[in-house]
Length: 245
Image (cartoon, rainbow, N blue to C red):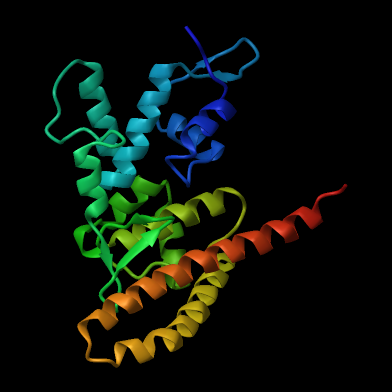
């Protein structure tokens, strides 16, 4: 039976899951959702079954917005050979996957918002309690409150898809040593970028032509995509300068 190191597992999954990290894999193991074997030296070794189980967990989080507690219950049923009451996560290329990807989050201009070309589910389709948000992200209640106090989360007693995505990203950054107060800079960057883009599409939104709203949505999507590419490139250049030759 072939086995994989945690780094090899990361490489196998990163094309499908942009936010996957080694720390996230370790976190899911600590929560009991995956159970890789260990070598005598303590290194994790994953089988193909472990990778598929991890993929199930990640898809359930991303596509169905399930908290870890529910995913763990589903895995227990599957391990026991029992059916579950909810559909399995879609496989790549399936009709169900296409239908899930067709659900879009509507921007203020009425267009679909995408991340790396993938349409995002409507924020109104997801309603999580504080406990569910913590379970889905691994954050503590105090962490969520800190993120909310600094404007990164807008929910109070109920959290939508935008809050969930922001909380997941924030959780990974906080595991790497940042605090909620440090993350406020991302909100400030987003506010400034959105204000700039608003100036560009406002003339389109003032037109009565129905196609103008679609044109504005397309322009916003293109601006966001290319702006993100430029931001990543500039940041990577700065980070390389920090490393010794």
